[in-house]
Each structure stands twice: as C-alpha cells, then as structure tokens.
Image (cartoon, rainbow, N blue to C red; front, top):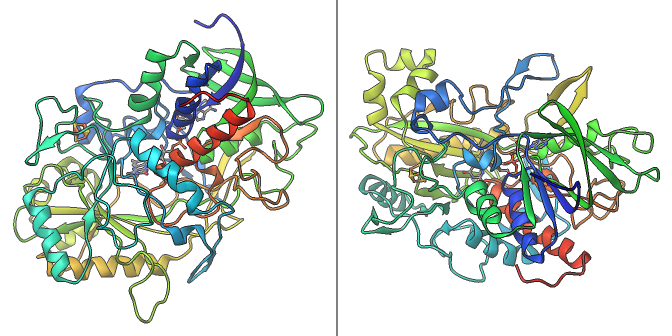
Length: 528
Ligand SMILES: Cc1cc2nc3c(=O)[nH]c(=O)nc-3n(C[C@H](O)[C@H](O)[C@H](O)COP(=O)(O)OP(=O)(O)OC[C@H]3O[C@@H](n4cnc5c(N)ncnc54)[C@H](O)[C@@H]3O)c2cc1C
Ligand code: SF4
C-alpha cells in the first residue's frame, strides 16, 4: 500500500522497456512507482495448453480496434506484469550495424538512426546479460561487431535440428544458434537437475509455467520488489491521462484508474513505456490547451511511422517425423541484406519457432491445406512439421498510424516491401527442399494472432521516432519529448526504422541508455 503520491520517477508499463529502465534506476535509491494496467499472469497448467493459449487466445487483451475502412480486429496485445514478454518468443538479437544507416528497399528508404550502433553496443552487451541471452558469437553472417562473447552458451540443437543445420551448410548457407533469453543450464543437451527451464515443447508464445523464460516480470520486476524498498508497483492501474502544468512544459500529474476510482500521482520524471501503440494513444488522450493535437505533437508525428515487420509463420512438412521437443534453436541471416542477383534489396531473417501442436493446426485449419492434404490427421501433420518464422523489414510511412476517431482506436496500415517477403519465403522453400521437406511451405497464422497483418502488433514500433529535429521527430536523442522537460519514452516508439530482427533486445538496450541519461540528470552516481 502506498502512503504518498509523489515519486522521483513514475514508469508507466512493466514490459521489457519500462522494467529494464526501472531495474537500472532502482539502485540510485530514488523513489520509483511503476504503474501497470494488467495483473500478474495466472500461473496455471493451462499456460502450456495450445488450445487455451492459441486457439482460444486466453491471454490476449479483449480490445476491439478498427482499420481505416472501419473493419474491426483484435490486436495481439497482452496486458500483464511483464507486458508482452510474458508470451514472447525470447529471440533476442541485435540490429545489424547497417540497420542504423539509411537502407534502400524496393518501396523506399529505411531511415538512418540519429544514434549509431557504436553507442548501442555496450548497452546491447548489458541487455544480453540482464536477459540471460544464450548464443554463439561468430556464426551469424551479418552479426554486428561485439565487445565480448554472449553471456551464456548457445542453446544446443536436438538431433533433427543439428541435421537441418548440416543440410543448410551443404546448401552454402550459414545457419547459427538463435540467441535466446532463457534460464536454462544444460549438459549434453539435457537440462541440469537445477535448471529453471526444462527444455519443454512450449517455448515461444506460451507463458512459461516454471518462470524459465527471460521475461520482464521474472528478471526485473520481481527482483526489484524483493530487493529495493524504494521501488513500488501498482497493478490494475490504468493510466488514462497525463496532465501538464499551465506552461505545458512539464507533466504535472499522472491520472490513473484504479478499481473504478481516479487517482493522481506526481513525479519529477515520468517515463512512458506502454508499448509503441498504447504509448502513442496515451499521449493522444492527453491533449490539452497547450498541446491541442496530443502531448508533444507539435511535429504531427505522434502515432505515425508505425512499423511491425512483414512476417509469416511457415510450416514445412518433412518426409521423416520430426521428434524435436525444443525446436527454436536455429536461425539464418544469409538473405538479410539480399540474396537475389535480380533483386538488390534486403529480404529478411529466418528463425525457427516452437514445434507445432495439433491443436494449433486444428485451430488454423485453412481450406488450402485441406485441399493439399485431405487425409492427414492434425497430429500426424504436427509430428512431421518443422516451423519457421520469417521477418522482413517494413517502412515507416507517415500514413501508417494509430489514432482515435470518434472514441474508437483506428490503426492504419499500407503494406510495404511485400515482394521482399515473398522472395524470402521462396528462398526458404528452396533451402528446405534440400533438407528433405515437401516443396511447399504452409502458412500458419495463430502464433501472432489470427489476422496478420493488422492484428499482428507483436513487433509494434515507431510511433514517436527520435531525432535531433523537433519538426520531424517527437523525441530527442535521449528519448525525452522535445516539447516537455520531464517526459521520457522507453519502449519501441522511438525506432526510426525496424530492421528485420526481433525488436526487444534493442528496446532493452535503449531503455538502459535512457536510464543512464536520467541518472545523470538526477545527479546520482550510484552504480547499477
Ligand atoms: C507472441 C509474441 C511473440 C514475440 N516474440 C518475440 C521474440 O521472440 N523476440 C522479440 O524480440 N520480441 C518478441 N515479441 C515482441 C515483444 O514482446 C515486445 O517487443 C516487447 O514486449 C515490448 O516491450 P515494451 O516494454 O516496449 O512493451 P510491452 O511488452 O507491450 O509492455 C507494455 C506494458 O504497458 C502496459 N500498459 C499499456 N498501456 C498502459 C496504460 N495506459 N497504463 C498502464 N499500463 C499500461 C501493458 O499492460 C504492458 O504490460 C513477441 C510478442 C508477442 C506478442
Ligand atoms: S522451454 Fe523452458 S522456458 Fe520455455 S516454457 Fe518450457 S520450461 Fe519454460
């Protein structure tokens, strides 16, 4: 129970962004309040039930949003302590060095970042430590320079994946051990008796029943609550507005809905980390006389330049049964910056996902599958499947935006770089034929939500890009709002471009960077 309502720092959102920032700031002794709209995700055996998690979408937020044509959809959001990392796949990769530069794609230019890889590198290294990243340096053909090894050894391949790796190498490719955030100790490919993670078949998309996945609750929020009396968490606390002082330069009050009541909290510094889409919505809801188009929106960029990757989850049907339990251990970046002589543009990244469960296939059963495979029972298909997640970069178009219209949330999206994604898929089909798969890869949809692309908000980024120029960006290079003196953002809103790797390690690294800036500003030299 809180006995006061003023804090040094308020952090809104307990996902990887907000939680990493709090983790870095708590040792300063400053009083930090974290406000989280969700509760703890229930720990139940059903967390490992594919029917419950994917087909019934048990943990997905019950939100209804609309596209630009008024069609409704349910975004892939999860409101819990730990945010979306409770259900994420924990593939934690660094952006490539060239991702920080302007990059030509078929449909336009992926913009340059105002802060480059050399500044992010030490923070990536710390983020990998904080989130227990297992990996092997030197294997990934587009890996950026590293100041050291991964903090933990790579998660070992099971025999079928080791075989796949060999086949891909024979085909001239460079498969690598996928960097994973996981609390796993293994010996000879088996978890040790004291390992938190047991290498089960529910890695990826499932909340972990054993707290073996490196998520923000397990690695940041819970340890903070245990160790720091200056850190406070309020759950089921929905921030409805940020109010400013009369000058419009400072957030003076954080308005919170708790159990049907409106409460107000104040802080010297307010950090928004609600996820790129929800953060933009919060600032839009906070419009006032001084900020008529939304807080910090003099540039008209708030909510715009949204990105989320072009992504598909594909299932290869193998001639031989695939008895792999923990499948998500391999990735390929050979096509990241290209690969087709007649197509000089980046294609994207390939990584494996968790093994398919029969309930997922049943939930996803699509007409074209039934045409192809009329007699194969779901369980047999699942036993013969190998599963891949493909991601390609999409571009931050200004018209791709989130906004309110007549009280409804509207998400507008025009797809870009679809051809690059199609070619990446073709490349993977060719590679998998070499590895003994059926020549066509089948689409799987439930992993990120039924209705990719719009509902596929898992990798949301870019709604408040950072930059030096207040006319074209919402945040400055320290992720402070240009127009306010005490408002920071610590989720993926700041991304000027998204690259093709999963975003979370970059969110964490940046949150640590922003925390260091705040620490300096508060004049505290405490070591994190
Ligand atoms: C199925 C799935 C798989 C994924 N796999 C990967 C992966 O393998 N690798 C990877 O890098 N990324 C992955 N991601 C993406 C990853 O989960 C996100 O990048 C990451 O969680 C973003 O962190 P965040 O802190 O910015 O936001 P979030 O994790 O979204 O956290 C934001 C928090 O803010 C809270 N909040 C929102 N609005 C308010 C409000 N108004 N008041 C109070 N609290 C609020 C939310 O409840 C939430 O807890 C995956 C996502 C999903 C859904
Ligand atoms: S593989 Fe490990 S981390 Fe993943 S759900 Fe199973 S026990 Fe948890």
